Structure formats: structure tokens, C-alpha cells
Image (cartoon, rainbow, N blue to C red; front, side, top):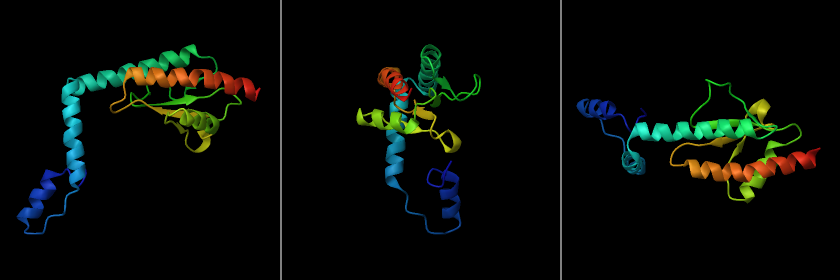
Length: 150
């Protein structure tokens, strides 16, 4: 928990007779809004199941599409983010830019993987259909980029 969501901190500050901080009310409103969305989805178990489904979609896609893979080993992958390794000769910056031009937001890898990895988030309110759309846009782009890089 952070400072703003720590009820014990607020209680202790009050008991000590110190002035309370000014809470970041937008954070509280955003938290309440998102908790309502999670509840409407069926609670945290349903949310985690949706993220696991998207992780599985990523694993299926990378197994099917030639030249791409997942940076993390099986059993160590995140249900919230996938780091996709690109085919040799395909630059992550070009893929990120091309997807951005189509309205998709992805990021290049970090540090040593910045040029060869694209990070795809599949968390929060994103859905399997959203991820399928992104992968449909990425697949021909990777093939087209790989073909032009050869």
C-alpha cells in the first residue's frame, strides 16, 4: 500500500495530533471506479482468469507465428505483460512506430533488448478481443518488416 491508501498512516497521524495530508482525491475516485469495474466483472478471480486467458493467447500466437517468441521462459511468464522477441533483422522501433500509426500502443524492450523485443501489455481493462486485434495487426507487420529487412 502507498501513503494515500494507508488507513493506518491516517489514523496514526490523527492520533498524534498532526495535520493530515491533503489526499489526492482523484486517486481515491479512480480506485473506487476501478473496484466497481472489477466487481462488475465478477471479482478478482474473474479478472485474473481474463489475464491468464490473454497470456495463453500470447503463448499460442508466438508458437504459431514464425520467427517470434516470448522472452520469458514457460512457467516464468506474466499474465499482465509479454515481451515478444522479433525475427532477426526486424527492428523493435519500426514495429512500435508502425503499430502506433495504426493506433496501437506497445513499447520496445528494455536495455539490451531494446532493438529486438516488443513489450505488449495485456492488463487492466484490456480484453482478449483487444489483444486478438493487436496480434492481427502485428502479424503481417512482422512478416512485412522481416521480408523488407532481408
